Amino acid sequence: MRWELSEEQADFRSVLRGWLEGHCPSSSLRGWFDADDPGPFEQQFVTEGWSAVGSPEELGGQGGGLVELALAAEELGRVAAPSSAWMGSVLAVPGLTDAPDFAKALLADGVTTVPAVPSGAVPGVRPTVSENGSGLSGTVRSVLGGDRARRLLVPVRGPRGTVLALVDVESDGVEMHPRALTDRTRTVADVVFTGVEGTPVVADVDAVLGQMALRAAVLASADALGVTERMLEMAVEYAKQRHQFGVPIGSFQAVKHAAAQMLVQVESARSIVYLAAASVESGHPDAHLHAAAAKAQVTAGAADAADAALTIHGAIGYTWEHDLQLYYKRAKLDRVLFGAPSAWNERIAVVLDLVPAGAPSL
Image (tube, rainbow, N blue to C red):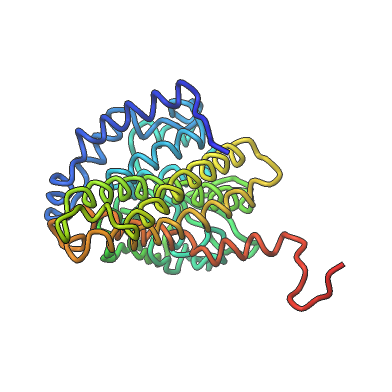
């Protein structure tokens, strides 16, 4: 099955791709790395309206849904753009929909609000922040975009179960500890809360965290799709240029097979990702299976494609001067971002009526 975009969606992707190619060349990326600040790109992305696409108009967005967000994630991955603040913001949206006036104010003024959940696990695990009568206390490891945020949407373990609270990062008792990643196109931070006052958010917490997990799976998969497509283009281009034994290495059967396998991964991933996005957006009964399959298959495939692309390039592909290393590292992070493939495969397994190993077949 091949997923077909609507005319409007195709136009959106085309225009965004052109904008990103002009505003996020690899030379600019390296400059932001040196300055340890992707703020100039993040600010442009917000002020020119791209960050509002895919969020409801009643929340200050420009409309659209998860398919449009997946398109944006794919294109951001395709240029290895700094995207932690953007992804964190769109993951927080489900927690703000029951307070539209408040949420609209947050989105309209460009304030970045990200969920205070560990980026190395499927969202929805037991909260590590608790309410002990004197404020919120606890530590959340590796919060995606935590160092880029102005506010945090925090799952809190309280006496009556899990609740949500909004916390300003400038509040007394909040400590932000950025962590270095091999993939320098994204950022994470450990957040420590010590007796912090938060603003309660009225919401169905289980539903919010469940939706957050599905959106995270789709968007990480879409990012991996964009990364894989770009690595394929780079591998094919390099295979035509590099010669061994007097001929391009692209003429070797092993190189052809590797590139063909990468192409199969790209085309199959595109259908999986956009089916999952549409399924989650529409509330399909099997949306949780579609999202889990996308996260498990697409991000694992992207990590394998990164290895194949590096093999085709040889050692030069991992040098700082070569752009492939940007995509290689990004693909490897996408694989474990918000849960490794094994965690998402487990989510599929627990809801399927599977026959235990060794059981007699009917």
